[in-house]
Length: 188
Image 1 (tube, rainbow, N blue to C red):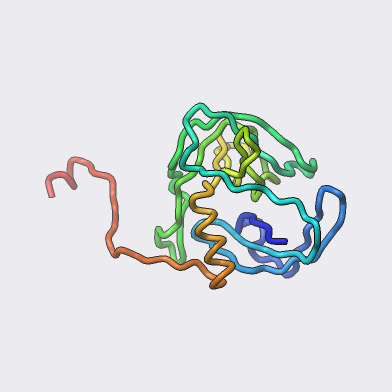
Image 2: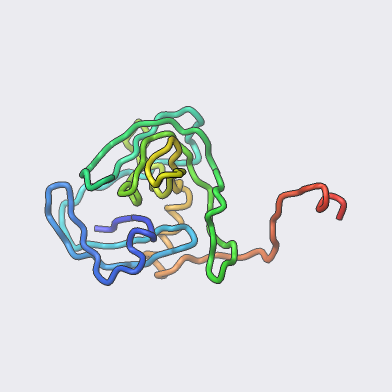
């Protein structure tokens, strides 16, 4: 029973407990977490668990319908609909350790209503395939204000495979910094 969620959902927890839709409750074991992608992999010992098919987030198209599943405001299994409004969106949230900018950001942006409690929930396409993990909203109030963001399965697949196999994510660093070009850097 492997379960993918957000790192910020489990970060700092001493114990993990998972309650399924049928109200069965299980203690969960942390397999691994990756703060850079804000993903975590946990596991419960149970049989006959439902699974979800991974879709290809790279094939999503702007304007395509998606569904966001989660538990906002402690409302179990809430589903909202929206469209994909952007892909590979960077929000400037990716702060790595010691303030370094090592966070992985390439979000699917949707207008599906996502609120606190949706984090770690599924973003699915109209075929019912997982295309992302809901992770963030843009909001000045702390509640949904029209923009929600999910980590695409193209990133989720790599991260959870590494967490399962190695307990950590295997990454190579190129050793260069990328910056926006302005008139001053253009002169240089």
